[in-house]
Image (cartoon, rainbow, N blue to C red; front, side, top):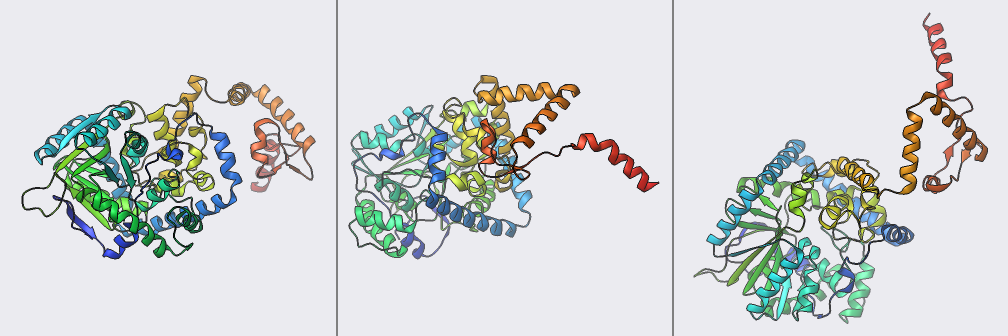
Length: 510
């Protein structure tokens, strides 16, 4: 493993064996990965139907997410008081968001003091234009990237490739996604939807190696390609897990050595972050470094946790000559000022995805957005507009598993209910729902109408029942009976039996 970037301090790192199994990624393709655009008009219902019909996908997703969720459940109780830690993390994030302008200014000032350049991008187009301009001015040819959800959000690879640069994803999962012209299905583990057989076939086809499902052999094949890219790249691009306003340092948390290669080997380094990825102080960072790996992968700490601050200085053996930080808004300011601010607490651990029964069944691609799962149902409409993604807030059982798993206690179920109300006010909720709830409200406001409606519904249910169960309901009711039979109502409902039951109780007590 090469030494870390200048001004990169190692908080923790495991043996180079971890790097061997993870520094395996890079792509020699010059073609834009067409499947990673997350573009076009979303058709959530169609995508869900396709996902549910793919039994292999369902089995792979269920197995992988349960494994990661169980790891979280094992790791979190190792903390002295997990709930207290999570509540403290939520308070720190809320305080940071309340004072975001102050901490962004402090971060920018301190980052510049270390010799770095800071750029603020209001839109995705501005962010990609800034990074493209940096690459052009530096006469860059090859760009290596570590994993970054924000770069997926702005479709950075597509723009840079379109501008004539060779762009290579160096995270093993992202590398697999790139050479397969696919897109990530999970925030933390982008190839969660692929089996080792899928990857073996892909590497045989794309890299020309003999077919093998041995993970070490597959990793070695990718590493062979990527090492040369690390050696020759002119520019590195990384994401930012946390930025510390107090010091101007950027924290990168990975399980692969590729992140450090991207930060230390090229002469130009660009770090791209969402404006909410701030913590005020170094001692605040320590708390999040306990919560993030436990929530994401069930680890006490990730293999590589690095702090980066500024370019190479005299006497440093490696590190970039030029360092840039691009801070992206893209709708975050609007979310900050609205009722969904706490969604910006998210530290992108993916715990809510692993716990979600809906995500486990349909995977990430069905959401047709960069951010899938429970948090994606909030973040995607907030950043990309509720109009095209109106189906996402409706696709939840509201079971609360996401809230239970979230390390910063984001109340996703409550906000999804509020977002459904937003849809109702906009007239975007399904027509049958609107009609149905109007009749429900009318019936619940009148005892006479309620009794009449209950009597007619009971009569109809008993009429279509077979052996005491209803197996097929009309209209939207078929969603329920597709998966289960519903018991037919009793001839005498509980309301009608109430007086008799009370009389029986009185006789028994007397």
